Amino acid sequence: MLSPARQAQVLPFESGMLPTQHAVSRYHARWYAVTILFLAFDMEMIFMYPWAVVVADMGAGAVIEMFGFLTVLLVGVTYVWREGALRWT
Image (tube, rainbow, N blue to C red; front, side, top):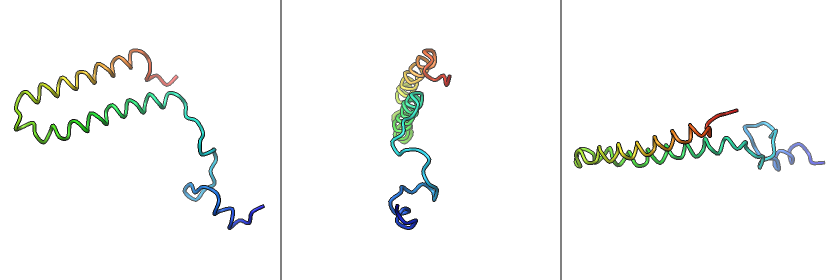
């Protein structure tokens, strides 16, 4: 048996509390769908920031292209929603 001081050195640190689960415990499959959805909107923001900088210089063509991009993203989210991938039960 390890002393309390040594035990504190070998256990993983979690906000000062002892961990209640194993470090490689599995997540429910629904969290993967939420993660993919988050990444899709995160990629949208990565494309929209540079676009916002140059939209005034590029004119109406840039606005039309961004609406096309957002339409494709919206169609994808609508498809996933209708297929039931975002249901929690």
